[in-house]
Amino acid sequence: MSCPELAVLGGTPLFEKPVPVGQLYFPEWEKYEAAMRGIFQRQYYTNQGPLTQELEQRLQERLQVRHVICVVNATIGLMMAADALGLRGKVIVPAYTFIATAQSLSWTGSEPLFCDVDPITHQLDPECVERLLEEHGAEVSAILAVNLWGDACRQDRLAELARKYAVRLYYDSAHGFGCELDGKPLGGAGDLEVFSFHATKVLSAAEGGCICTNDDELAARLRNIRSSYGAGPARQVLRTSNGRMSEAQAAVALLSLESFDSILARNEAMFHAYRQGLEGIQGVRLLTPASVSKTNYQYVVCEIDERAFGLNRNELQQVLSAENVVARRYFYPGLHRFVPYADQFPDASARLPVTEYLCERVLQLPIGQMIDAEGAGRIAAAIRMAGACAESIRRKLREAA
Ligand code: T4K
Image (tube, rainbow, N blue to C red; front, side, top):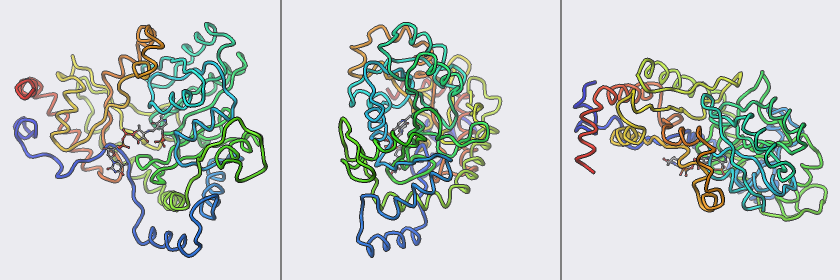
């Protein structure tokens, strides 16, 4: 590849159609049609139908947990979790995560207390958690940790802190389905874990998610919240909601589960193609999930160092966009800069240096159904060329602005 071949400098885009950032694995049409026919024949759409029950059973076995409670999406799952845990006051949460993590607290009446993350792994930093626990004492009722990018937090250290300071600990594992820590599937840590089965996730229900717990009482409360006192033994709860997963969602998730091993194998091949293709490019760091014993390759995450690469992250995103590669800036900005938190925590930026740093440098590259290992290699080659042609690209972008 040479400079003029880059689409931003007048070449032909690498891909004819935009390639989205992640996953979107669709089941085979014939299998989907058969599953939908079953729903039509049974005339049963939702409310713990046979497909949802089967999915919960299978997930319990796979994740080795006592209870899996399927929900309409992970955001609602996190809101239900905060209510079922009876959280009040402040909840420690990373500032570097998707907005839904903190919003689940705002919806249920507690206040996020933003914590920084580790610069190498991007996971919640236990040292920062401990500082906040010391500083805010009894005002803190829980730690909501996030297992990010197909990797995991330092769960042993977080569990120690939760015990020492007598607070709840639960996990937003939206990115974590299929990952293993020390050979054990994510899902059974803390009081509970919440997974996302959004279409952009490795396991897809189109929209969907589940809450996992080994606590029988918590599970009973969650089931009452999910269905407005519908399924399971009755429990009085503070608030009910409608977090039910439909049979159509469960059907997609069951088909996705059937292909799960081949999905991970495809992802692995793409990740290796990126690793090979990006090797040795100055100023581009590809994150390799290192805390887990098995990753799901949920995201391909790069850090761009402008000084070494020649372009900053936003400029590289524009270069890739011209190639029809929809690279994303997850997460931008840090949660402490969103309404209403920016007004509530005006000095948060100074306390969150790693979050601030990552929000300016991190870029996600496509992985999943819409691409393959060869395509990943071509994207990596375009990134290499962008670094080599940085000066001309900058000039071109300035002219276009
Ligand atoms: N916690 C964490 C740490 C999370 O990352 C998330 C969600 C949650 C909690 C909440 O989980 P859910 O309530 O969503 O179950 C996306 C996803 O929608 C979201 O699930 C994900 N994390 C977040 C990181 O990214 P957006 O708004 O940035 O992008 P979206 O979904 O519109 O699409 C991504 C790309 O895929 C686009 O380029 C368009 C393409 N696309 C998307 C869909 C849905 C398609 O081509 N076809 C499609 O059907 O949020």
